[in-house]
Image (cartoon, rainbow, N blue to C red; front, side):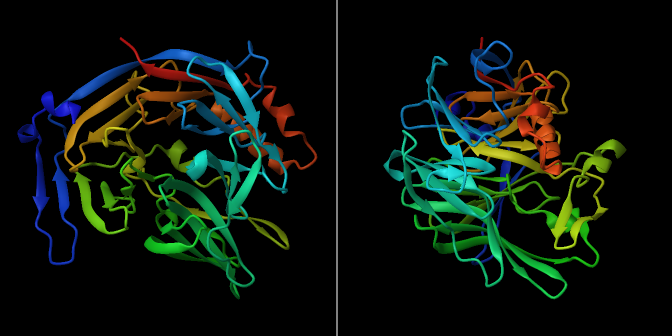
Length: 403
């Protein structure tokens, strides 16, 4: 790997804990990395949207690269996929709102499928809408089977060769409410599960709806897949631990780092779960909340093209002058350095999406746009976009490491 010339493996402070037969080894890293902290000043390559563009974005929730290196942007609110080349020229816009072939609603993620197709993850009912590059509908993927009287949800998906990795949930009605089983699984390209990696069960009692943060935690948004097909996930909320699975689904190692969770302010605690309600035949139920005093240890992660694992922890976005800080681990799980991303944005108000090739997509105004969209759901007679236009229009900026 290219970084070994700068940081010899012998300098990396990590220990491998002896594992019992049948158990995966734990790679135990110190709190600080021997490579120190690198600062990346992110510079603008191009931008789209905003007041000076003729395009109006709703809520951009994901960004991916297609096979030619173009940037695909998913607009959850407007049910559109915008494709831009490396110079920022808009090549096309595909997708539309609806329930027919090639149509989708409230999609959250993009996934690159075989045959150069684009997959759109529609959370409910859970499925992956497949499109050709020109937007022509292709056969969709419906993961698993919902239980009788129940339904399924898909939170996210990634594809590696002839395998899908899916994060979702199956829900079934119970006498008191709903039973939910969340999962992270390897599936074939038809959505049939071939290997269960992680699962968690939860019973929701509609007679006393409670949001218990500790019980609710799962790996949604805290898992990823590498270019070699390995799967990375953080199933432990209060421990800095990343589980690494082989492409076949065998647990190979657990990467750990000495870490102290970040304590929340009272305002932050008040925000957790405040927007959650349960929809019942009798209307909306506001949930009681049991909120923890500290943030989860792992916030997000991705693997770059060199096989390096980038992890944003619960302190990320809270360092002065830094948009986001990442811990970087080599393919063997050794903590080699930290990277501070400096960008012209606000970590509380804007989004940052990693493309995995050293470039990032800054979504300026994401929090305000998301809040406006949610408010639109609460007012069924209102036009979603009308609320958004009262704020500064959403803007997308492609960033890369500058001088």
